[in-house]
Length: 161
Image (tube, rainbow, N blue to C red; front, side, top):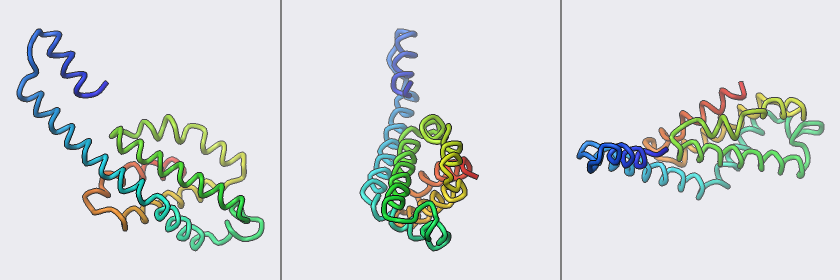
């Protein structure tokens, strides 16, 4: 339930208008939401660049992934990795919008470790991929905006460690 809905229900239960303090809280909530939307907009607009930079960093750190026999060897396998990277970047935007790690938990990491282990995908590589996203996002985003991304990226990284 959103702050706005909670405020309306509380005021209605007491047969009153929202207080000035409640209205200030809603105003702050809306300003915060606008800031989150700006952050998400920058990430979405730069998705391709972030994924390219992140994958380049990952392949430099782990060239064995793209070498013969590696999990990202060949164009098809590499494309699947990049698809997953895009999915995790999108998951970060969900968490930013929600202002909560809940989407990461419910959508992203429940069962992901086991799935990657069953497929033989190095889980450490996924943590390193998210670290690479974080680094790429830090370059693109202003410092104050990056602060919206960092805790969720860190939480996602810890999920794969």
